[in-house]
Length: 265
Image (tube, rainbow, N blue to C red; front, side):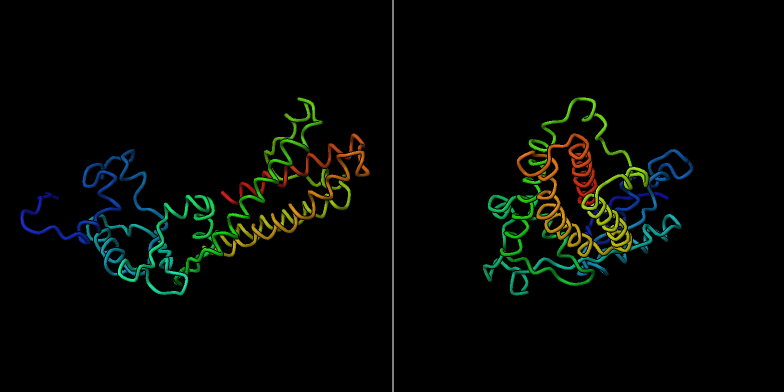
C-alpha cells in the first residue's frame, strides 16, 4: 500500500477512520509479530457517543476491514450525551453550558467523574444537575472519613507485625471467615455479594448500576453500620477492648475498605 498525502481536501471523519490502526504503525509491521500493530490491533471495546456512530464508528469498521482484513473492535459501547439538567442540549446560545473546570472547583474532580460514570445508561443521555454532583461530593467525603477512621483510629493500636499481616492479597478464606463474630461475618458476606454483582455488571457494561451498588454498600452498610459496630470491638469505653476481637475488627475494616476501593477503581 502506498500512502499519499491529500493536497486538496482533508476529510476529518475519513482520516479519523484510520485511527485504530494508523496510530500503531500501519502499514508498517504487518509481518512482524512483535510490532505494535500486531500487539494492539484489533482492540476489543470502543466507547463513544451515539451521535457519531455513522460519522466515525462505521468508517473505522469499514476501513479496518478493507485495509487490514480485521474489524478494529468487537463491542461498541454507546454512552449518552451530557445534557443540561432539564434534558436540553448544552448550547452557548442558550447559556446553559456547564464548565467542567468550574464544576471541579466547586465540587471536586472525583464528584464530577463519579457522576458521569454512574449516570450512564447505554444509549441514553445524561442530564447533569448540581444536586447529583453535590450528593456525589458528599459520598466522596463519606469515603474519605471512613478511610481516615480506619487509618488514624482503628489501626492505632496495631503493632508492625499486625500491620504487615493486614495487607489484602486475595479473598478471605473460609477458615478465617468462620472464626469471625456475627457482625463481621455479615459485612464480609455482603462485601463478597457486592464483588460478584459488580463484576457481573461491569462485564455486561452496566457501569451505572455497578456504581450505584458500591455507593449504597459503602454508605449504608460499611460507613453507617459496620464502622459503628467496630467501635464496640476497638474501644474499652464502648464495650470492647479485647485483643483478639480488636484484631478481627481491624482485619475486617481493612479488608472491606481495600476491596471496596478496588471496585471503585
